[in-house]
Length: 291
Ligand SMILES: Nc1nc(=O)c2c([nH]1)NC[C@@H]1CN(c3ccc(C(=O)N[C@@H](CCC(=O)O)C(=O)O)cc3)C=[N+]21
Image (cartoon, rainbow, N blue to C red; front, side):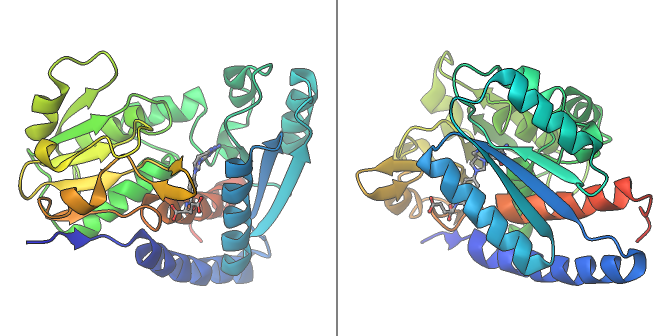
């Protein structure tokens, strides 16, 4: 039997509609317009696509969106100065520094100075710490989106084995934290696999939930998937002129019970959660947490 295809595109559209209503109500009640500023350094074409998608989604939801484009030669000091300027600007609620940054800039040094209240990516150590302690301020957009996709399947996750492929700060590590939390769409037993993991195939084969976030085109094949597993594909790999995930979709969909496509899966949900975090930021910063 073929798996349910979890359409991130459709789910994200539903979230964005709901959010647009919440934004409108918030604006009416407070006269505050939620405002996201994205910072893009250099001219990486993939980053430009994401930033454009984010911008369009913001506009549609009634969120103000500003893009600060800086040349690839921007120095670390110049970028730090811009972040500090955005921190100090009361009209800016969310700051997103698009990754990756050019090699001559130390990413950690930049992310550490973003005002944690404006850190809609949840990359600041204070926000990471809050997540680890189970009292999140913001959830990182990709794991947050994945959590919503898993919830949408209404499948039981409590006590199930979730295997995450990839130990990145952006996806793998925070995803593990969300999946081991208490509550709906969580309570899982989590294993994180990475490039040094032994018996990786056997571990993946024991998974009830697979989160593939290693950046290797079509790495997860049908023989690695337990029948009935939920498969979430975070990969976005350009192979020739094709966009493929970290999962061999055609084969795996015949074994899994639910699977996310690429494109139209995790990507659109990541953006929807970014908008949600921006509204939350506007609420927190304007002292209108109740609206
Ligand atoms: N500070 C920061 N925060 C991020 O959240 C962040 C980042 N940097 N750097 C890069 C990654 C990647 N990312 C994506 C967002 C949307 C799509 C997306 O919309 N994808 C569409 C279309 C993809 C395409 O056509 O290229 C889809 O999958 O259907 C993809 C990838 C956010 N990231």
